[in-house]
Each structure stands twice: as structure tokens, then as C-alpha cells.
Amino acid sequence: MGSDFAVQLCVIALVIYSTSLHEMAHAFTAHWLGDPTPGRHGRLTFNPLPHLSPVWTAIILPAVFYLTGGGLFCLAYTPVNPSRLRRPLRDYALLSLAGPVANFLFAAALIGLLWVPGVWRSRLEDPNYLMLILPWAAFWGVVLGVFNLLPIPPLDGYGVIRGLLPLGLRQQTDAFARGGMVTMVIAMMVGSVALRAAAPALFLVLDRLLPGPLPLLGG
Image (cartoon, rainbow, N blue to C red; front, side):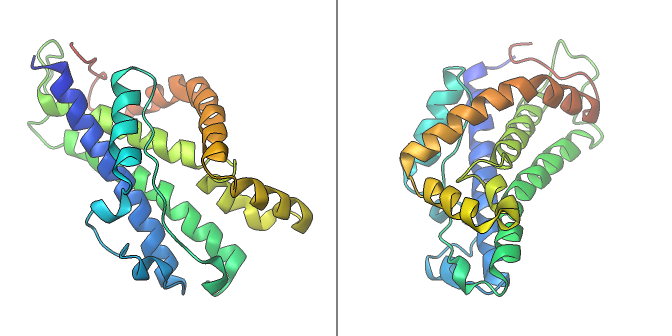
């Protein structure tokens, strides 16, 4: 089979695109719910570049993490103003949920391509590139969606449950969420532990959705 490195680069490219769709979903949902902020920042677009700046957070970090076996995370941010939403607590939960849903839909589309007649080979000892790239891109897309749904500020999962918290607790967690890079590093560390625990279940679900057993890189 061809170079594992080429396969990894293709997987990274698809996951980065999945991240841009994640942010685009945030932007369009916020716009639909009454917040013009994403549009003013040029985020109402299918072009991935506006969603993935700065470049080092969108490309260099995931490449380093993935190629060193440490995991794959894409850091990006969509500017929103919750006060401009029609119903701030409810609508913020909806726009927070939109990003992970976009990850899951993109992963489902990749898996769906593998069910197209002629794409999947029955001989796993001789897989084609699509059999290697698409399942692993789908897996990492699901990982990103699940990671973002963890109820840890400033991740999307916190945005989903934020409106259910008592006002005092919500003010404290909002202050923690504004902690910048330190807060994100803490969230990534906690999320990494949670995802490692959940990885076997995610592999099992993915294996059941594929036309055949999950091919291994270099297989």
C-alpha cells in the first residue's frame, strides 16, 4: 500500500475541513438566531480559511499531535455576541450544539461514501486509499464532536448546558471560560483523558457502521 504519511496528511486535511464546517455551523446558526457578529467577521462562508485562523492553531497543532501519536485537536473560534440573540440562553445552547452536529454529519457523509458500490474492497489485505482515509477521518471527526460536547468551559458542551445552571454558578463558570489559553489547555487535558476512556466504544461504533472491519494503517 502507499505511504502511511500520505494517508495521514489526507486524514488531517479532512479533519481540518471538518473543523471549518464546525465553525461555519456556529456562524450560520448564530446569524439565523439574530446575531450579526459572525457575518461582520466574514464567517458566513464555506471557505475554510476564515474559520481556521490563526494558521498555527488550525494546521500545525493537529499535524504535530496526530503525527506524534498524541491525538488530534483543531483549535478555532467563531466570534458571537450572545446578547444579540433573540433568546440568549436557549439560542446560545442551540448554536453551541450546531458545531458538534456538523462534525457528526460530516463523519456520516464520509462513512456513507464507503457504502457506495465499488469503493470498499472485500480483501482487507489490499485496501485502497479511500478505505484507509475515510474511516479514520470519520473517526477523528466524531472524536472532535464528542470532545466539544464535554460539559467543560469553554467547550461547546458547556454552552449547551449553560442555561440550566443557577445564576451564581453560571457566573463563576463564565469567568473560568474567559481564562484564554490556560483554560483551553485544561479543557484539552481533561478531554484527552475522557476520550481515551471512550475510545474503545467509539472504535466499536465505527466498526459496526462500516461495510467491513476497520482497516489498519499499513495493513
